[in-house]
Image (cartoon, rainbow, N blue to C red; front, side):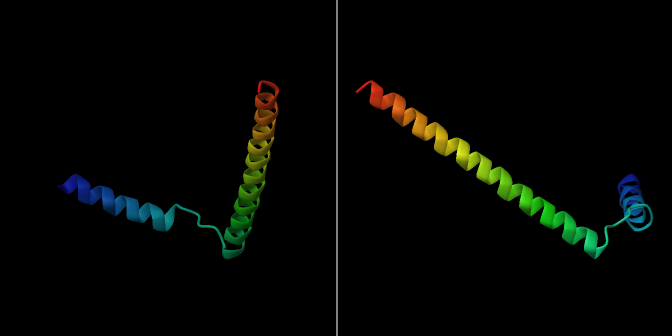
Length: 64
């Protein structure tokens, strides 16, 4: 049980003393980057899905 308490104590000290937390401005910039990347990747997946759907419709229509 002593080892578990020591682990939590050292973890807490590390979070307070050794971790460098981002500033509010850095956090906002990172959030905007993640949101923009998410929108771009979503658009790319949508375009691939739409184009493959259209291609399959064309292929299926050839064999009717």
